[in-house]
Amino acid sequence: MSKYDYKELGLSDEQVLEIYYFMLLARKLDERFWLLNRAGKIPFVISCQGQEAAQVGAAYALDKDVDYLAPYYRDLGCVLVFGQTPTEVMMSAFAKPGDVNSNGRQMPGHFGGRKYRTLSGSSPVTTQFPHAVGAALAAKMRGEKSVAYTSTGEGSSNQGDFHEACNFAAVHKLACIFYIENNGYAISVPLSKQLGNHNTADRAIGYGMPGFQIDGNDVLEVYKYAKEAAERGRNGEGPTMIEARTYRLVPHSSDDDDRAYRSREEVEAAKKQDPLITFAQYLRDKGVLTEEKEKEMNDRVMREVNEGTEAAEKEPFFAPEDALTHVYEER
Image 1 (tube, rainbow, N blue to C red):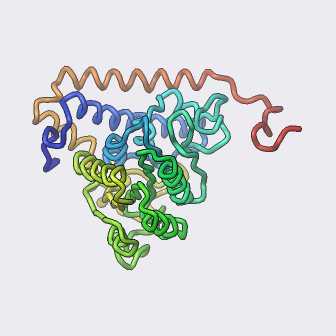
Image 2 (image 1 turned 180 degrees about the vertical axis):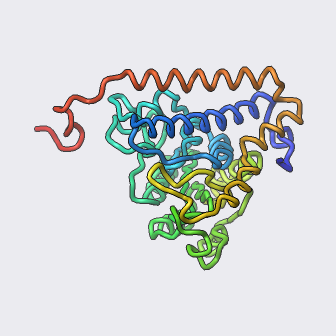
């Protein structure tokens, strides 16, 4: 349960319902990905399950018409808030022509696209951090009030790209939000074996920027801190580091077996704090999510997931002669 009153955060009934909608949509799309993967229809899943609050709350605090998004591979919730549709996400999963992320050239979870102000990501982890800093520097040079949001897991925060980006942004007071979704595991390596200091937000002081560790399962707390960080950036006060403590409820990817490195008891305990369940109950207690509205939303989400799946599945794959299109220069 959230300790915040959404109205005190400036959110309306309609907005908190929309936040829940995006969280639910991310979850149901992710669940469909797993079914399609196990049926041999899509090649790979990198899941957002359990991290929807950490993602949707942060992205919802931004201005999708002005700000830039440089997400990491698990950030399905973020890109949905920034405008990607279920059909577009499914086109990426199926690697079909017309995929807005890479026109079917990237693995699933490699988000991008000028249309949605989303910087293209790639497989090397944390390379999106310097890219976000570049976007923020360009915005500052143009006199724009844009914020560049970039995220990663806690394991990836040990990469050199992370530190160089943070240092440069702090020196030049760039409007960046450095967001760490700490889900406890860098693939199979637990937090205790990743960092000497288990609070990644503590690193912020070394760069001269504010750092906050927050409850990533509380979507309203996430929204609050991301909103404040965006306001600091727009006011010329420089970057902010936020560590959202969350939990990955499923294996690292569809190629992983998490039973090898974490107990079922640990996972089951985490499921009791599932942000989708706790936020829905919060909204029910506030009288916002009525039984009728909940049914309407569930029906809407499943219809959109089904329609997106069907639309992407029926599209033809690339022709063999297109294999090298956008890979090598054509002369």
